[in-house]
Length: 98
Image (cartoon, rainbow, N blue to C red; front, side):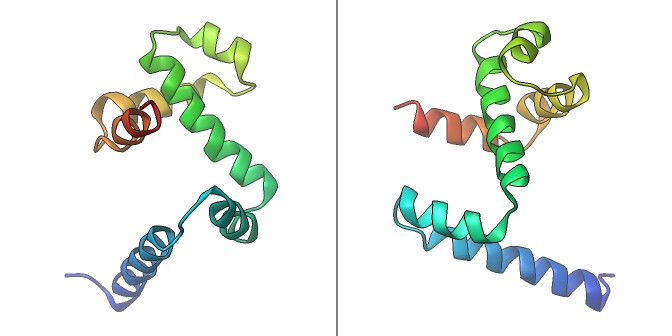
């Protein structure tokens, strides 16, 4: 059974997703994400997407690290999601690649 706190957190996450879906262009995304995240958080999220792109293109961990200053554990985390996750990286990478 879900506790009240978990239910509230789930609603908060759903509201965040709905908020993102209201954004119409990169400028609106930049304004919202700039307010929502610290600069370092935003850079970390952007790096994860680039790691996924590089791994999908066949780059090794060493090749990724030579291009993006991240730890092996971050690359492993992204690779695990890329291979066994819910398909979000693939979905987005396919869409931005077109």
